[in-house]
Length: 433
Ligand code: 5AD
Ligand code: SF4
Image (cartoon, rainbow, N blue to C red; front, top):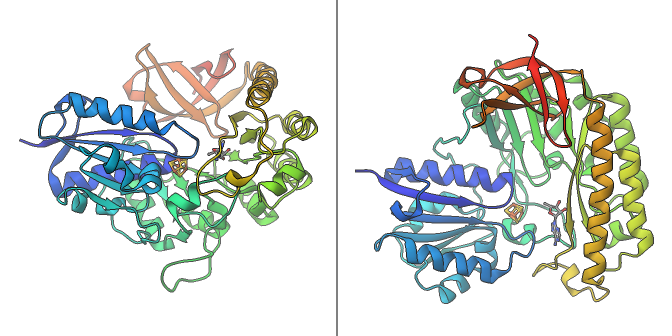
């Protein structure tokens, strides 16, 4: 009988891909099959995120719950960014945890399984050329890593300390992953890295000189591939050549993530983001000019240390000018091992909460305005998900989430859809071709 694996994945798309890699390795080398019932599992994995403070006691209370409900001989492993950050402290505080496996060490999953109390959290470990076995949670859309780690030193961010320095994955490995995914039925790939448009700055071996724009060109040459998405690019590295390729290449989905973080040049400096408010606005304007249908999403942090009302107004001003189609907004959360943790000019927590609410209220108004313009328009939608309410859901190239009445046969297909009803976040439509 096969062994059962239960896995909980928190955090970003990189973590989703890390989980897929661990599932594939455990299946190939340990015969594990996935279960969504932790009480039946022989192995329970939590793939953690540490980008914001999820109170550490929450992780330990969750571990305590798993320990109570698990089969008596089942193992528990903690993986991901909090594993990198807390290391052996996890086993000290929860002695029933069998192993701790940091982000960027996931290729060691079958090894740690057989070494009780193993702690593998080396952030210099180089997995950039590891040939992982294959597992994909969706047959329609394939996540493909193009780099590991991050070389930036944004003062709020823990990631360089949990995922280490940036190493690009060799181009031929990426292309062969894309080919494999397409052969297995995926028409869309999602290229992943902490800072994708920094691609090609450092490889672990000798490698031809290549940048992200050239990588996009080569990926788009893969036959059978229809759509390319990527995340996250850094606004600082959005040069003209990159934006022009984005505009020109028909396989690249017209959806761009541009993490603003703050609209104030002063705060951007304190965050060490490397660009100004004007540079960001200039890049967004260029994008909108060259790709009139583009959808731009962003990440914003409010109440970073030292943020005045005026700084916050600058952020709202950028939002009003750019009119982002999607905003992920967060209240600043001090993280260990970061430069900003030492900053003493903290913004009062209540002020931070108020700023977050007013930012979200502004974004709601912008979204209502944007979604009302969608009525009657037509989009090519690639359907990926069957919903229980008799609908299938998919996205247009420019990332509009669209639902139509449909069934399994629509999955993995692209259809022309006319929008018949709009809401703030999801649009409803009917297939016209
Ligand atoms: N506090 C709040 N938000 C943060 N992010 C990263 N670090 C922090 C932090 N310390 C946000 C950023 C980033 C997103 C993934 O998480 O906006 O782009
Ligand atoms: Fe992803 Fe960052 Fe969270 Fe790590 S800390 S899982 S890199 S979002």
